[in-house]
Length: 77
Image (cartoon, rainbow, N blue to C red; front, top):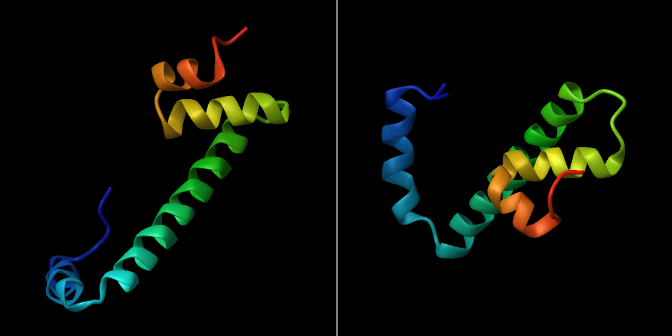
């Protein structure tokens, strides 16, 4: 999904290279945190009444992918 206008994308493309690396890293970390929060909320909405462990696993399946989540967290019982 991309809700950014072409003009805004062009402006971003012009501004980002001029930013100091520390600012670009801050921006990336903030976007990643926002995305993690959105995914977590979607998982909670999709699994009402699930245990915290089940929610964490469902999140891992979405954030990583099911195969990677299985490597990290084991198979789903």
